[in-house]
Structure formats: C-alpha cells, structure tokens
Length: 383
Ligand SMILES: *Cc1c(COP(=O)(O)O)cnc(C)c1O
Image (cartoon, rainbow, N blue to C red; front, side):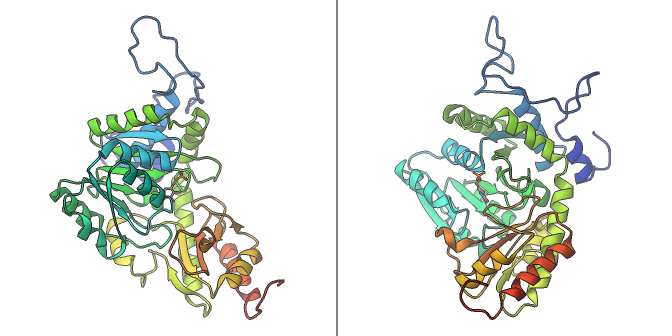
C-alpha cells in the first residue's frame, strides 16, 4: 500500500486495516469473542485479557488510523461509544487544578461532563465555536476541546489558528470530529493532538451500533488513553468493532452521497419563505463556508434550519415519508428532529436538525418540499 501516488479515499477505505491475506482465511477475519486468551507462562504478548486487548479491535483501530492520517504512524484507541472516547481523553489528560476550554455550543452531553470535571477540581471554561471565540479563554489552559463543525449549530472555527494559539500556551488540543468523519476532516493534519469521534454516526453509518475512537500521533499519550479505557472498562464489544470495520468499506460511498444530498436539500430549502436560519457549511453563502472550504475535505451530511414554531416543525416532521423522526445523524436513512424537544441546546423551538441519508437526491428533496407544502398555512394540529 506504499505506492507513490496517494490512494483515493474509496480505495483506502475498502482495504483499511485488513491483515495480510492468508490462504483459506477470510479477507476481514470475523469477530473474536474472548474474555481471556490462552496464556501459559509469562503474561506477555498482545492478547491476554479481553478488557485490555482484542484482535478485532486491533484491526479496526488500524483501519481508522489509516483514514485519520493516511501513511502516518498514528495510534487509535477504540471505545464503547463517542462519550467513552471523549471521557477517555479528558479524564486521562486532566488533573486537579488544570483548566480546560470547552465549546459552549457543542454536543449536548458536554455540560454533564463539565459537571464531573468541576467535581474533580478542574477549571472548566466555555466559549462559542464561531469567530474562534475559544481563543480568548486559552490563557494557562491545559487542554482545548474543539468541535467543528459544531453540533447542532454547524459553526466552524479555524482549527490551525486555535491549535497554534493553544500550543503557544502549552495546551493540548482535541477535536471532536464526529460530524465531519475522518473523510471530511483530518484534525491531526490541522495540528491537533487528538482526533476524537463518535463512530455511532457517519463513520459506521447504519444506526445500528455505538462506538467511538481516539487517534493521536504521540505513543505516550495513546498509552494514557488506552490505560484509561482499561481502568474505566469502556471497551467496545467485538461484534460492534467488527460491524464497524465492515461498515468502513462503504464509508466513502455513504459520505459522498450524504454530502451531495445535504447540498441538494440546502439549496432547495434556501428558496423557501417559511425557512429561516438555514445552515450548511457547503452552501457558498453560509458563514462557515470559507473556513470549511479551507480545512475540510467534505462538508458533511447535516443541514439545520428553523421553521416558524414548534407546531409547524412537528407537523413537518410527521408529514415526511422518507425521513425518520429520530435523533442522531450520519446514517444511511435520512432522519430529522426538532432539536428543541431535548432542552439543552440554545436553539429556537422550530429548529430542525436534518441528517441526509443515501437516498436518491430527487426523492429526498421532493419528499421534503412536499412535506413543507402540505403543512403550510394550516394552523393547529390534525393536518
Ligand atoms: C453523538 C455525539 C457524541 C457522543 O457519541 P455517542 O456515541 O452517542 O456516545 C459526541 N460528540 C458529537 C459531536 C456527537 O454528535
């Protein structure tokens, strides 16, 4: 795989993490279900106990590493979920008395994490993603946590600029890359110390498993994160790890189609009178577009917009036929939800987060426009 010209994402994806071929063995070996491994004598070697290591994780971790940083020696640690991966970085890197800078508009569980960190004596500062506002909170910080594009507001910050400022302060930088996936953005190339993601979303893309990962260049830091996984026991199941690896083969097909569908949808919504606050980093007049174009390789499959009020938003979601009313994003089937139903995110009542799936774009756009038309004008429910 060390050809002179770098391979394309699709080519890399179908072979990522595969072991050298062995006669009569499958290309991608099946999941290894083992709590412990045969271990006579000294307990050395790669596989000892199932909470420390597992061959199915090893292959998946190699595969993700090849997508995060092609051709580079990086280390990846797979976790049971995105939150387990996020906790793995925060709790392995921060000590009592440290300061951490989180985004104020990031994933909705970050405030819960902030509570835990404060209880451990960590100073938690927050600032919005947009306008690189986290720059103003960096003085003396130990770790900067970036989420770009942010979920669900889809703001983008200048990762290279924030990394330079954070490193000048002696702070480490982690990027939550969930929305972009490794195909949409490579945080390590942009200078970050940790690329972290929930692989529950677009990276695995079928909405049938939870998983997360941390990738970094520094082997000592990777060991700290791996040690946290062992201590917390936040380990992926072999079945999930194997399903994730299998799903990676199609990641470029899925992400490219999701991005194309999101753009088609955003363009169609841009002309609608009842739609306000439309955001998609790939729309040329979106505030995130210039920065996203500089630092991202794909714009992602999530579009957000606001309908006039909770009632209209709910009726719209109900009228959709090809789109599931469900939380999460990045799956092969389009989904959308009224984000305000959760509380927590600072969004208007009619705010819709729309995750474009891999349907045919004409069908998806037609379904959305039909649902908008059918729910126009009629106040109240029962439509
Ligand atoms: C979903 C999500 C997470 C959490 O991932 P889980 O796999 O649900 O634990 C973290 N960050 C972002 C941006 C997410 O969208």
